[in-house]
Length: 206
Image 1 (cartoon, rainbow, N blue to C red):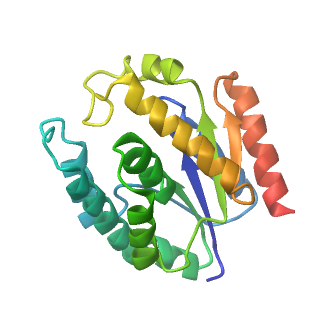
Image 2 (cartoon, rainbow, N blue to C red; image 1 turned 60 degrees about the vertical axis):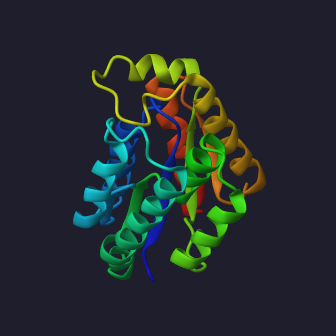
């Protein structure tokens, strides 16, 4: 595959959408073809799975069912969107990927990391992001921002201790995979956040 795969990770309220738009514009200014996508979702079927996963009325979903749905959506997403775009030589930017599963289903729900790794290897083989930008902020900051959005989805309704586990897992992933992760301080003013992102992308180009 001749394209490049970048993922943007982080808990709720860290500014992923705004900064993904910034990354798209940064790459397009370099005359690069860009596909922006998201997880869960990205393809027609995966978006239908996303709607099921985020439905706030699905409070009694079993943790294993949630995990398997995440990877089912990911398998479809890879087949229909990510791999074809990479083969066309495009830069693919995904709003979350498998690191989110380790953070939310592993850290948040307490599912075995080994079980997640087995599914990761089954669905993805050796395919991994080349660069992961982790937008990080204290849970209290993120949840305050989320509270201004209106109706919350099934994940956004979780308690702060859930998101503390999510954040800690993300930071642990960044610690053990320094070759892939760049941690961005998302508490800074937007201009400073985007300066950190630009530096990380410039380093990646080098």
